Length: 274
Image 1 (spheres, rainbow, N blue to C red):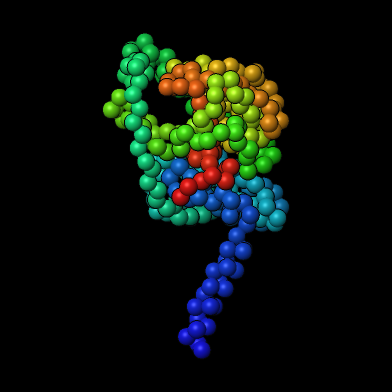
Image 2: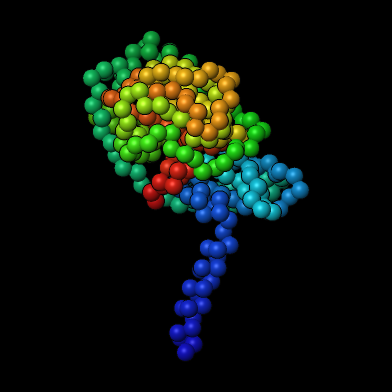
C-alpha cells in the first residue's frame, strides 16, 4: 500500500503546486530566450520597482502580490538570471529554445547589402526606434492578454533565423500574419502612439505604448491611420496591411517589446509554442 500511495502523493503535490501559481504566471511565464519570465515580488503597500539588465521592468498586482513581467531577449543565455528589486536580488531560471530557419530571396539586393547612403539612413532610423522601445511610461497596461491585431493565419513565427539571399541577418523579431493588403490592423489593447515613420527595412511603421515599457510595433503597412501622441482604445485601427519596406508581399508584422527586449507576441494571444 505505501508503494502505491507514494506516487499518488507526488501527483497531488504537483497539482497543488500548479493550482497555487497565479493566473498571470500560468498564462505568461515562458522563461526562454525571446520569452517572458513572471517573477513574484511578494506583497507591498506600494508598487515596487524592479530592473532587469539595468532596465525598468513592468510590475503588476495580482490579488495581494506584485509580479514582475520580464522580457527576455533572444540573446539571453539559458541558466540563472537575476532581477533586482528594492536592494535585493531575485533569481529565476531561463530554459532553452531552438528556433527554426527561414530562407528568403529578395530581388532588391540593396535590402540585403545596403549601400553607404542607405546605411546612414538605417542608422538614424534605428536610433529613433530604439528610443521608442526604451521609453517607459508610468501607466499600468489595461490588460496583459491581447486581441490579435488581425484575423488570419500565421505565416512566420517569432525568433526564426533568417537568411536573405543566403546571408544570415537578424532573427525574426515578431509575428507575421498572412492577410490581404488593405486589411485593418487593430491595436490589441489600450495604448498611446509614440512613434510613426517610414523606414528602410520596416516601411510604414507605428509604435504603440501600452504602459511601463510594454510596446507594440506594427510595420510594412500600406497606410498609417493614426498620429503621434494619439490615445487609442483596444480595437482602434492603427493602419492597413501592406508590403512597404523589406517585404516580399503583403502581410501584417507585429513586434512586442518588454523592458527593451523583443519577445514572442504569441505569448500574449495564447498561441505560444514551446
